[in-house]
Length: 369
Image 1 (cartoon, one colour):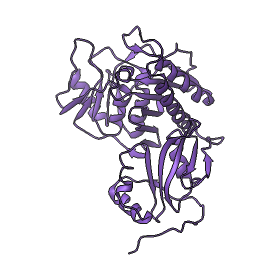
Image 2: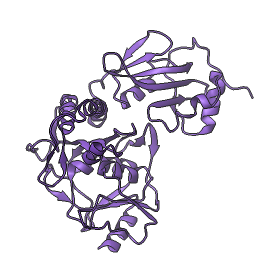
Image 3: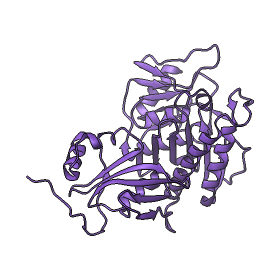
Image 4: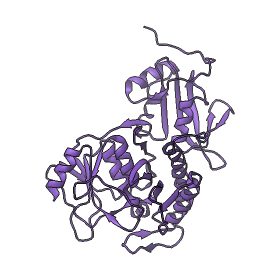
């Protein structure tokens, strides 16, 4: 049967475009575009590329770039039957924190619109957080080796890039109109019945200073102690996880969920101490970036994360990942076995296990307790 073809001048109605996830879709898209599959294959692993396809032969290959004015844009590099104002194209650009979409064939440009009035708060948060992550990406790159290195009270490093990241993120999140707590600022009071945002503008500062991936931007929207939406951007690779409870979690636009993997991720052990590895784990990974660690549990790359063997972790380090874990259907339990609840307090340390299922979480609590 011949491949379905859309004429280049096909109507601009909404298409059912989705992110390509496998070689079969790449090969079909290559036939539609008349190119070799190798011209599209790197869109699968590369976070800066996004291949969108539908069942009728429409194809859009997007690439994330920066314009001459320093703003991020999504460039429509190749297309067939798809246009820059397609909802899926604009949504992909928004998830990258881009401010516009440009047709690579000409001068046609469309701004990425903000969410309209009446949009659920979680969706408005994700749009603003994506913009914040992109602005932080630029800010920390320009601030590398700038300012003075200091040490915080907990022994962690503080760089000029941390302050630059905070300022960039806070400005992008301000339109949400909710209290924003940050690792880089003293806490502000939050009424019990009000949502709040907690962010770590640059998680993994030590990794960033050493040039050792990963380091990340992390933000979460919290309501009644529950992280309900989150975005984590690995600034070293470009990977992005985003999601909201009830809407699922995605990594680079592809739906993800936890699985019972044999790898356990753990935070860096205190000086002179060892990382406790559950007997059920086949391997352990220590990345030095807690926000990314919890995302690896949410997307099934790792089976569990735990910090029960140490004093704890700050809420800003884990809230973004915990929101994504909840959105993906995973579970986080405290040492007492109760579901984890977050408080607007960036000083207090929290301890928990994070896994894909409550059964697995309780098994870990018994094993590590």
